[in-house]
Length: 376
Image (cartoon, rainbow, N blue to C red):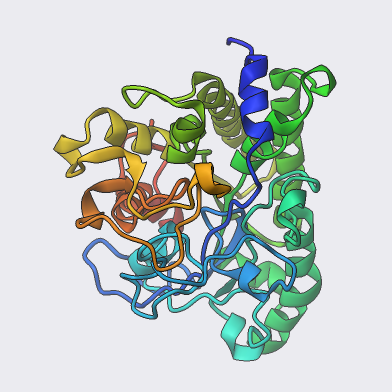
């Protein structure tokens, strides 16, 4: 494993921290290959931008928001906090699982009967570490997300369902998607001479995440879905800042993502014996997106390097990541991999959710897919 070079850290020193995602509205679906309600009752979601359903919209001091057009242009309810043109991967998994809307925890109306099919706790710009995302203003750290689940949602769920939560939670999925921000907006922002090695940093991240999974298990959780870190070195904002030619990705950043994902996959095997009766699934979104980038035409894509929307210009003081308000859009959003400088289009999210739910390729869904997980 090559150690990241100092210039990759300097590159990200100039990036603002605004990694966020979007509120999850999951419509009921009768798609083929779905599962019955008796298999799974709901979903609890933790993490950062790629699984956020808009919690940050309710945070007064957060700069990690996407509540304006062109975000949500293809979503039934328009701009909703999702950093994409339509649905995110959580929405699409909900469709596959026949789940109704899963509300954002920070929404004041997420109380009572609204929580019985789950709650989304994720917060854009957050990470596994508490200090990740601090420059984005107010975010909800993973530790705080866990406390919100344990101290607020669980007692209310027990009252609503009239059952002990330890019995209830066996019928819920626990989806965790986090880690990317800890590299892009923490590790690579640190002064070179103050940064621990990538290997030590990654080991600390996965150890912390393992303890969080243990906590969820002790509260009653049994079915876990762990989303990998995406190829962060291939984001349009990274290519724009480093002036990449021929669509080349930043290998130092991708190496960090690779290392974390390897640790995360190993965590699945290492954790299961410690948590009797549990099942964990690793979804390799890195590979799924990488395969699109390497062979776009065969998967229905054309543009793998550019944002679909007009992003805020770096030369004019913008961040190179967010869509410009009411800015221009590409004509065909379905053939773009990225909607803005960081987040994938709905077309990519469809593929991610489909692979997560039904892929039989262990390099994509390990050791089983989500459909198999919920049938256990």
